[in-house]
Image 1 (cartoon, rainbow, N blue to C red):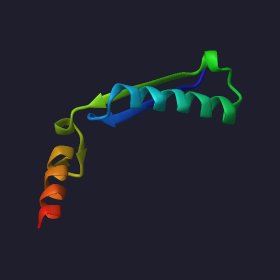
Image 2: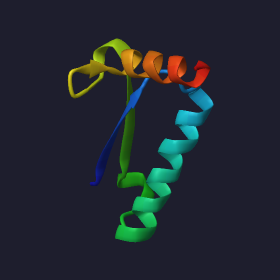
Image 3: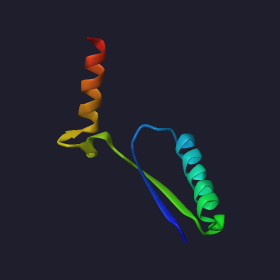
Image 4: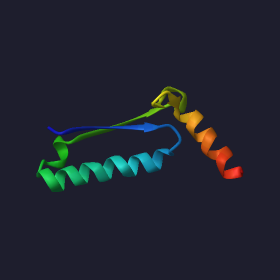
Length: 71
């Protein structure tokens, strides 16, 4: 039974995440040959303040990028 976990930074709407988990399940089925009924795919959304790249949180990185675009 393949189990796939997708970790995302919050901000995507439910329909987009739903389409993603379905597409991942189909891809696992097609590439591994596992029956769809045995494939588990789940996505978790993490607040941008709880996700870091190095020592900067995702919300800080987004703020920096937005201020750079304004300059």
